[in-house]
Length: 449
Ligand SMILES: [Zn+2]
Image (tube, rainbow, N blue to C red):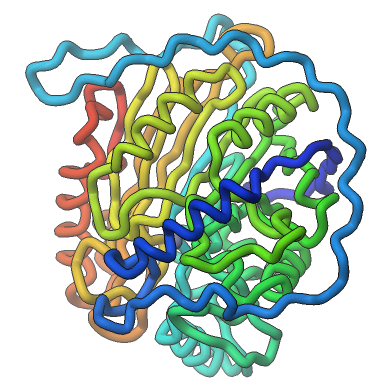
C-alpha cells in the first residue's frame, strides 16, 4: 500500500497479557536449551553461538506506568472444533475450493507478508556503498529492496518483520549476537511499500528498552505501523488497527523466545511473549474494537528447518480454530517452510529470510512473500479467496548484494550474470517446500512457478 498513510488508530485496551512467572520458567528453559541448540541469527553457525547473558542489557530505571484499568470482557465463545490435519500428497483428495464471495460487489483487499529482515553488517556496508554510488553520505537501503517494491507496494496491506532493534542514527551498530542495526532501514521499508512491521522476535530486547524505543521511533518517523513491542504499558495495551480499503485490519505480533534474555521485571510490556491464551484474548479484543480481519505475526519454529515443528502445527490449529483470528504469518526459521490451509484459513509457517547475509547455505537465501486476497463472504466476515506466493532470493555471490523478486528476474534479462540461474534454482527449492502440507491442492498459486 503506497498511497497516503492514514493516522494510526489507537485503541487502548486493558489487562495484563503476560504471565511473567511462566515467562521466567520458559526463559530459564530457553537458557538451558541454548546450550544444546543454535537459537540465534548468526551469519555462520559455529561454536560462538552461545546465547547472550540474561543480564546483558541495561534498561532505564524509570518505574513502569500504571496499567490502564481493566474493562470487563465478555466470555469467550465456545471453542470451535479444531480442524483436523490437512492431508497432503498426490493421493489425497483435493480440498474444497476456497470460500467464494457471495456478491459481485463484495469488499476485498490483498495482504502480502514477508520473512525476517535481518541486517548483518555486510548489508550495512552494501548500503553505505549504495549511498556513495548515488553521491550521498550515510547508508541507502533502497536499492537492496528495489526489486520487490512493485509486489509490495501493489498490495493493499504489506506486512514486514523487522527482526532486530535499530541503533542511533550515527551508530554505534552491532552484528550478531546482540544486534543494533542502522535505522536508515526504516525509510527504505516505507519506500518499498510496507505498511506495518511486526517487531516481536528473539532479538527484540537485544539492546534493552533503548533499542525498542529507537526502533519504534524510527518506524513512526517512516510512517510504518508496528506491533509486538512497546515503549510503555499503554502502547502495549494499544491495538495496531490499519484501515485497508474500508476494512479495519488488526495486526498482532508475538515471539516464542528472547534468546535467553529476560524482560526486566515489571517491564514485560516491552515485548510480546507468545502464549496462546494471550493471543486469543488480544484477537478477541481486536474484533470487539471493530477489526474485521485479525492477522497474527508469530516468531516461532526451528532455525534452518523446513519442517514446522509440533509447537507450530498445534498452535496454528488452536489459533485458527478461533473465529477471532484470520491469518498467521510466521518467521524465524530463516528457511522457507510450507503454507497450509487449516479449515478455511491459512498459515504461512515460515517465510524464510527476506534480507540477511547468511551465505553458509543456499536455502537461507530463499524467501517467500505470501499474498492473500480477502473477500467479504457475508457481512463482516472475510475469507481468503486467493492465496499466492511470490518467491524471493537474496543475491550474495557478487556485489551488489540484492534482494530479488524471482518472477521479476526471470521475466527480464537485465540482471547481472548468474542472478537468473541462482533465482531459478531458488524457485525450484521453494516450490518443493511450500506445498509440503497440501497447499497446492488447497489452491495455492506460486507466482512464476
Ligand atoms: Zn529469529
